[in-house]
Image (cartoon, rainbow, N blue to C red):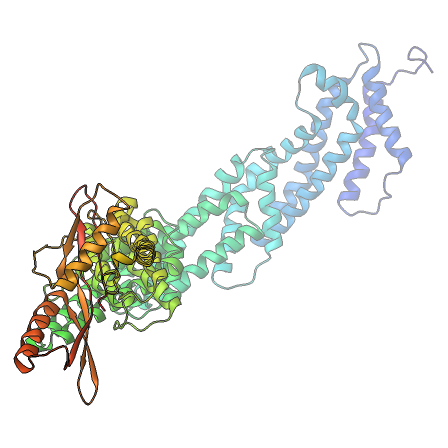
Length: 632
């Protein structure tokens, strides 16, 4: 049937039909006996609206129908919804409200379908609010505006009851709070202004009352347990019924009242505060303290300050104990004093291990506590003990670990671990160059006199020092180690030279170590009147070395030389290891004695100089070498 042939529907007749459909929907919502809408019912209602809106003017009733759509909601709310809500209070009112809101959304959905043609054409052309928005606005303007204060108060009352341990209907609160969100139609203004602001005020007041009692009654660990549990429960409330946007605001209020307000009083409790927890190694409580105070602005500052103060106090106690132990020893027991200094370094390492573990575990590797630990150790690690600087103590401690027969008897793994810890302590020493000088001198003795227990450990600590202090710090030490390696190659070449040059045989087994002047500590050189055998050794080596280079001058350091002397007596043969100076003196004495006792010493010898060693350095250019000859 064409539009011209279609019968015109007047407004009163058409709305009477629509009103019957709307009444049927209201009866269904009120639970009255009413059959559900069939597809035919729906189509008849939709078609009626369609026809009334597509008639030619003046019979186009789009605007009147748009107005009556809104009036249908207003009439139902005023006549039915509001009276049912006004007669109920508190939780019962909330339950009725949830029911009425759910029914209202159903009504909006169905009427929007009936009047859908208005949405598609009329509303789009006139730029009017859509039907769904009009329906929700009716509930907001007539129901929500009247009742939101009572809604808020009832919800806050239920939340406080739950905080006191009572069971409440969380699903109910969730549904009611959804109304605050949904009524905003995409905005959070109603939730934030009409509910959240007052809820946050009530939260602050509630926890302020609780905290004022707990701070007087509870120890610091007990108080923190309660605070942590309160924060956990508030997060749980957000998860179950509050909007997620409330979580940071809610937790901030709780943290402020429970922690910020009483931070100083809590941390400084005499028998249970932060000092006591550190003293008694209460790691779990310290971890909880970090978790709680890390959430408040600058909350960790006083905790790290107390931590620094505590570590400093313990470190200074170690220094005093070591000083007292050293001063109580007599002068003839300096070896015991030295042992005490070694014990001091070991205890400092143990102290560092302990509190570094605190920083990494209890304080979650936070930079603030690394800084506090560093500043604390810088205070007492730069204190001397028994007249020895901390740099010298560390160098001596390393020497005892690395040299043969040292006082520290450790496995290879333990040595590596200990060296790593010593290098970490070095970071706290202000005069690192002084440590380098002490360490270099002790390293020289270990290398020159074959006192190193393990070459790998020597190289390992140099690598660690290089990573900690830079390449320039270890360049001379690395050069010393390299010199020893090159010296062994040089000695092999020298032995090949002797085997290939019969005329160059000194008659003595000779071992030479050539070193570089700039790498090694300074050694004084003195002229000596060497025995003929030793002079020959020097000349033979000079001839050999001249075949390798013409631009270096050798300077002999006799103070570093050693000799092996075999004394043949009737009961047994005695072998002596003496310095170069000693062997020269002893050799002279032996010849004098042999001459006095026997005019024919070559017939009745009783002593034979077997071996000796000595050293030399280059003078120019700035290179040096060290020589250990063995004399037959």
